[in-house]
Length: 129
Image (tube, rainbow, N blue to C red):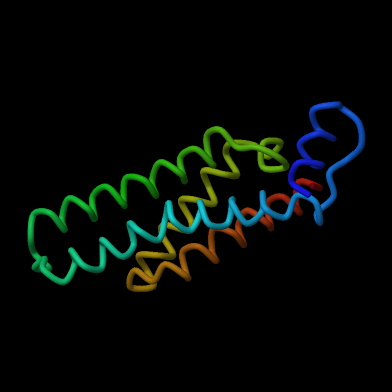
C-alpha cells in the first residue's frame, strides 16, 4: 500500500487517497506529540524541584511573557487575512482597550481578551468588513 502511494507520486499520476496515505497522518501525529510532550513532562519533573521565587522560574516567566508579547505585536503590526485590511489605529485601539480592561478587572486575562476582541469586532463591523 505504501509502495503504491510512493509510485503514484513519483510517476506524477493519480492522487494518493487518505486510505493509501494513512501512515503519513500517523507519523505527523506521533512526531508532533513527541516534539511537545517530552518537554512538558521534563517541565513537570523539573518544576517539582524549583522554588516559586527561584531565578530559573523568573527567567522562564520572563521568556514566556516575551513570547506572548511578540506574538501580539506580530498580529498587530504585521497581520494577515482580514485583519491585514483593518486600519492600524483600530488594532492598536483594541489592544489598548483590552489592556485597560485587563488591569481594571484585577488582571483577569479573559476580560482583557474579550474586550480586545469585542472592540476589534465592533470596529470592523463599523467600517463595513
